[in-house]
Length: 111
Image (cartoon, rainbow, N blue to C red):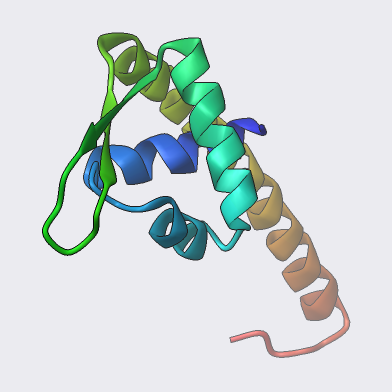
């Protein structure tokens, strides 16, 4: 599981602990099998606790709760994710400025 997938899954589970794996798969744009694999990996790592309960709309369902270890891991992953996205933003910003400079040098109005 990639760190981006782990971050997205932890974020979704924290926001909606009663979401089905099918709903999560749809939200993430991945297969149900991948979500199942990733949820099982998070449970095995001790980041998520899955609790079975009865629901009148569905015969059986799960609630996915982030453990204290999961909350700490999500915070650390979030910080790394933010830093990576800021670096990507800065690289794109520099590329845009370079392209604008090239176009201006060629006499193109970029406004």
